[in-house]
Length: 104
Image (tube, rainbow, N blue to C red):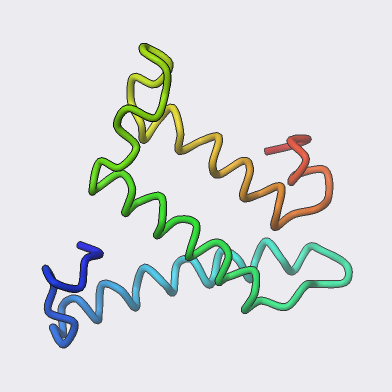
């Protein structure tokens, strides 16, 4: 899905789906960041979240994480790596108690 040589970037369906997915992320980030005082700028936080999620999805899809973990350490890459990655990202984006693992 993310490789330029395998998608039609001009596809209206792809543009709609991409816009909808970005909209969900943008709304969620704006809602979360609104609780911080002072609220950090949305765009840098959004870019960090988007690039992190996009990069992780690409690594999963292209199976680039295969063989990175010790034998038996990771059974399901999405489940075993996804949650810790989201917690790390929350820590980077949310410097308060939630980001530090308090109420996440």
